Length: 406
Image 1 (cartoon, rainbow, N blue to C red):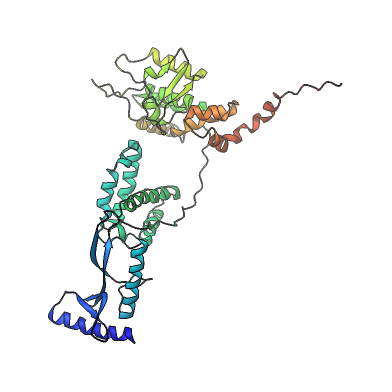
Image 2 (image 1 turned 90 degrees about the horizontal axis):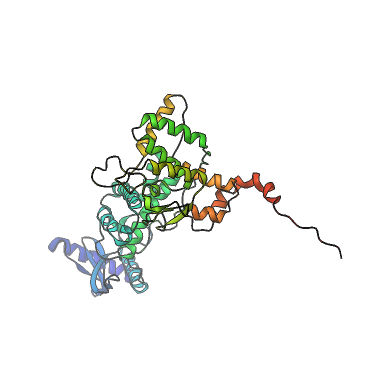
C-alpha cells in the first residue's frame, strides 16, 4: 500500500514537472505528500541521490544516479522498483561495489593512455608494436564505447567476426589478452569495477607440430638465396648462425663482433639486453659455429661492429633489421624450381635444440644456451621424445661393477 501511494504521488509529480518545469528534478512523494528520502524523478525516470566517495581520488560528492532493475539493467518503471533499487545502491556504496559515477573515457582514447603508460613502454618494441596492432582491431570494433559500457556480448561478437575470417583460435586468445590488459589498467585507474572478460575461457586450439628441418634443407635454402637475393651471402651467414646457436631471429641481428670470444670459444647473445627475458647468455662453440664465425671474420667489413650490418647503413653503422625479404625470395625460387620448402626462422632454433637433444646434451645446458629460465623443463616436455632412440646407448654407459663375494 505504501509503495502504491508513493507511485501515485510520484506520477502526479512527474506530470507537474513535465507541464511546468520540463527537465527538472522533482522529489518523489509518499501518500502523505511527504518526500521520500533520496528518491527523485525527472521526465518519467527515477533517480537516487547519494553522497558517494570517488575511490580513485578519495573525494566525496552528491550525485543523482539513474535507477535500473537488478537483472536487466533497464530503467525502473514503478515506485516499488525505485525503492528497491535505491536500497541496493546504498548497500553497494557500503561494500564499495558501486559503479564509477563519473564519465569514463572512451575505449579509443584510453588505449592511447594505456600504450603511453610506463608499464607498457618498458616492454620490448616488438611486443609493443604487436599489442598496438591488436588493440587497433579492438578500437575498430568498440569505437567510442566507454570503458564501463563494454559488455561480454560485444567481446563475443568480435571473436565471432574474426573467427569467420578464418583467424586461428590461438590468435583470438591473444587478442582477448590484449583487451584484458587494457581493462585491467582501467580497473587499476578506478574507471571500472569489474572485468567483462571475467570467467571467459580461452578457445581450444591444437598446436601443429613443426616438421623437423634438416641441414640439407638449410643448404638448399642458402643456394637459392645466393641466386635470388643481392644479400644472399649475408642471409646464409644469418641462417646458419641461427641454426648453430638456437638464437631467436631478432636476437641474432643485434650481435656485435665484440660479443664473439674466440679465445674462450663463446658467443654472447643479448649483451645489449635485447633478448626475450632481457638477460644475456653465452653459447659455447660447436664445430659448425666456430667454422662459420671464422669464415665470417675473414670476410668482415672493416666499417661495422655488427655481424649482420645493414647494406643500406651509409655513414651510420646500423645492423640489418630483417632478412624476411631474402627469405621470401629464396622460397619463391625454390617453388619455381619445383622444390617447394616451407621454412621460417624459428625452424633454425627448432633444429638446433633437436640436434642437441639427439646428441645427448643435458636439458639444463640446452636451456642455458637457448635462453630458457626453467632449467630445461620445457625442453624435456617438447623435445624429450627425440632422445628415445638414445636411451639404450645411454643405458650402456651405466656400469655396475660386480660385487665381490665375502
